[in-house]
Amino acid sequence: MRASNIVQDLITQDKRTTNRPLTFRPGQIISGKVLKLFPNQIAEVQVGSQKVIAQLEVGLSVNDRHFFQVQSIDGQVQLKVLESPGLNGKQPSVENLLKQLNLPVTKEYVSLLQFFLREQLPITKDTIHMAAEWLKSSDSFQEGLEGIRLLLTKQLPFTKDVFHSLTSILKNEPMSLLMENLLTQIKGEIPTESSNKLSAILTEMTITEKEKISNIALMKLVKDWLSSPDQLKSKTAFHFLQNTGFISTNASEESMVQQGLEKWAKADLVQTKSSPALNIIPELVEINRTGSREELILTLTKLQNIIKNDANGGMDSKALSEIQKVLSDIRNSNIALPLNERDMKALAQAIFQLLAQETDRMELPNRTAVWKQILPILNQTHQSLSKLDNMLFMDQAELSTNLSNEEQTLINQMKNDIKLAGMQWENSHAVKDQIKHLIQSIGLSYEHELLSALKNPEGDTANKAETVKPLLMQLLSEEVSPAIKDAAEKLLFKITGFQLLSQEVGPLLQYVFQVPLSFREIKSDLTMQWSGRKTENGKIDPNFCRVLFYLNLNQLKETIVDLQVQNRVMNISIINERTDMRMLAAPFIAQLKENLIKINYQLSSIAFEKPKDENVNKLKETISSRSAMSHVNGVDFRI
Image (cartoon, rainbow, N blue to C red; front, side, top):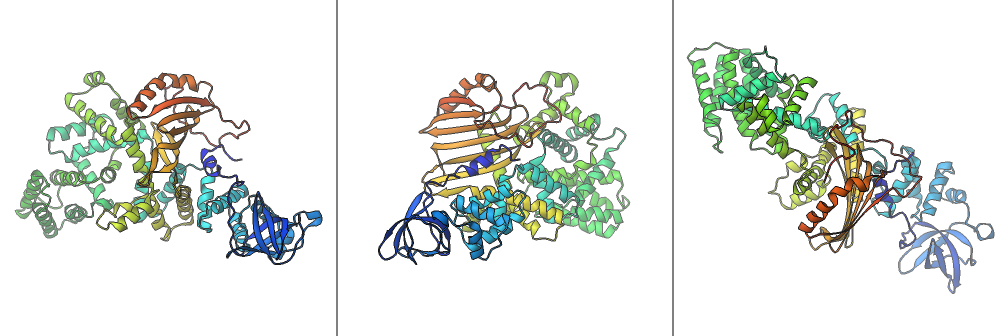
């Protein structure tokens, strides 16, 4: 059963072939009817709804139907009759054509050839044979046929990978689900460099907004505790973690600091490989464990010299002073080896200050990945996470009642970090930037950006390769289990399928994409299609365009917004099964008009419709929330 899915509507909207101009290639097989005969074996032949003047190899009778093979298109189309006409001028059987092409006369081949003839697709022996082989591995014969039609009508390369990419779009499998499936498989295998990178990106994309908020808040707390040179701030963060249950009240700060350092030292952090200071830290932790005095002195000396010679001049002087003090104590035999928890804490906090300064220079995703390595030392129970979540949503009056001034400052700083990293639906520019970031992170623009990077070798090409698509290709080039290979291929085909559907045809441009989104505890996928004519710089003209926006939501369910712009005058259609959509939207229409005027658009109309096809199948899956949002009644979110 096929689901009602806007993606399928988008890619099948050009299904009608009535007005598509005929194109002929040597070897191609067509079905035609002879309309008129002219001297020198010239005839007018009707192929589908169109007529063509062709040179025939043999004389034929008017009104007879034949299968023809194109011999040449040089100057004039030359056709070869493949067999005798059918009875009473009817088209000969496809079974006879299959025999003549030395292809198996099976139910599958007959159905496939009939489909090619009905859709007026270019037939050759090779295309029929390859298509039949691909259909054997297709989950759905009908979806497979539709994939072949798309492949040929959009004039894409006739390859198996392109076929699988297109059929992956026809399936009702959200991209976020494919990402989660791959993550599950990766976690069950021995990690590699590429799988670690891929896992980090996919985890960030598929976690809920609530989980993301908790992670950001925890990383802020851990960073303040371990790396802040302000001792009061560090102590406040540590006690806050204890009070909320993330750290046991019986645990000593010294032991927890050492656990954090050891956890970070074991992490495979590609993002910090360019930092000589931080690369020494795993070596330092291991040498202290073995208790080698000479090696520890040598390593601390190297670390000290690197900090002194830091070209950026950003390394903390307090951190350097602490390292020099520990080094002096070891040289003078004032402390024994291996360092005890108290001495190691002083050294560790100096190291974490360096870590904080180094990560502050990184982009947010890389910075997050570094500090996230330390989170496993915390007790992330449902109770502790709920307690933190409640505090993050307290108003200032509640914070003042329940927390100290120092703790209130921590909470407010966490709220600012969360606001910057989260999806700010009330800020259109922020939404645009974050969706653009998701598109780039998935790799939907990978080839375009790679081409730009090749034209400009001085640009940042490294980050272009740290996106999902190139990492999937890298993973598939390695020795991986069949389960990982299958999951990775499905996701790669999905991404490539959307890229194939995004085309430029003359002055027109169409861009289709899908990205995973989260609304509090709900996961969904946003599907959008932009289409319109191009401007001089190759972008969609904002004065004349169409945007289709699709989401499957917890309250509103399957929701489609069809936005059409003509000379900056906007008409909007909202398609949804609910009968109260107009009532729900009414309070926001005036505000929408005002905001559109601010960006020089005029709202002409908003129509609320139900899906027109009364026989459309229900969705295979609906996005459901494990716990309903009690503060929402019939509305998911505002844009």
